[in-house]
Image (cartoon, rainbow, N blue to C red; front, side, top):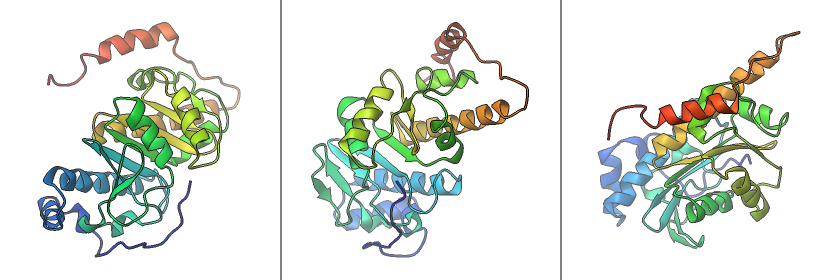
Length: 246
């Protein structure tokens, strides 16, 4: 859903919520706990990154992060570069607003569905171009690359439903069974993770794989080689040991 442009009650100049410790200190002065202030700073930085990396246009897309039983979310219709430490927006797990005066994202039902039914601590929703294009063509992203395993397996496409509705949230949850990311038909992407960085990385990987498949499948007279489920299972096992030890 492309949320309407507007400045709501956002205040300040660009960069206010992206100034690290100073932004957190400013929020604490406004009575926001330190962990919430830090999470809000990271959420705004992630939302701005979705714009900088071309995953959203304007105020489309949205981001959430959970702190205890509070879910911080981007507000509806506010350009991310206008968000400041004073604009902290949060709801409880039932959707009741408990922080801020700006209205939460219109896609709140999807975010709450994930925070209530999975181990998600962060959720990223975008309108990434290539992934959205793929969502209009297939019911599942073909196994063009082994990074599908990082999302739990073949990436499904959730059937279309109007943005911001319980129906869309339900369709999304079904598509995410055993997965950490899916496509939303004629809409975009949604991924979740233990951190904002992990959720964002999964979004970026999903967009990249979509782009690769579109490029390969567009070559006249050629059909892309796809991985087998067995090959993906082998990769999934190896990914458990990927990266540095905790």
